[in-house]
Length: 278
Image (cartoon, rainbow, N blue to C red; front, side, top):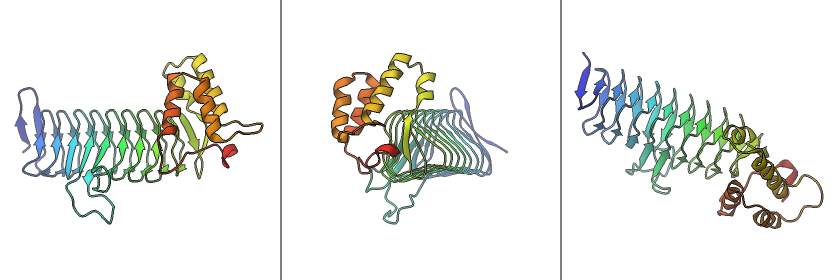
């Protein structure tokens, strides 16, 4: 027998082996598959699918139209020895796809108290998103990526397989982190980093071209990048080069990079190998 909660528009179907705690708020058109567990403080919006063996716990909200594959867990207690079962939370946006064995932990009171995952995000099998992280819309996190606590990944970023991101690191919009890369410092918007440890190797040219950025703007981005990180000649101090970029270029994306650098950082910036001593 399958339990069915009827709504005005669509049916919500809960498999008889699933455990849904009293108090959980379940929307319309939700499918909760075999052996899933849903905690009492969970809110599941419309048309969410929990396939099987999915665990959703804590003060967690799942956005509409998202899909959760077998053995993933969302909203479990953080792996922080200072955590003392405070009522912190976790939120996943609409149309997210969370694949097998992904773990997403709720926030801590020493952080923002919430872990936020944006809309249209894809997190592939075996990845881990730790407490107090903020993941922007349309981010793709590939298999076996490890995201430490308090990390911020802005929209459209791509994190390739088995990368590891240190606590408190910021990853800028549309940045690319290569596979098996250890990221210990912030990555500028549209930056491309690779290696152990990560080094900035250029900008994310493929994303820029695929998203309609003109050849003229790409050329200016390249000039701005080489002004900020020159490969040849006597190098001015980094702050002088940053000011040169600020004065010479007025493109929106270049301003975005400059503003990202201007924000105080706990981790510093990933830089190219040829500028390591700045």
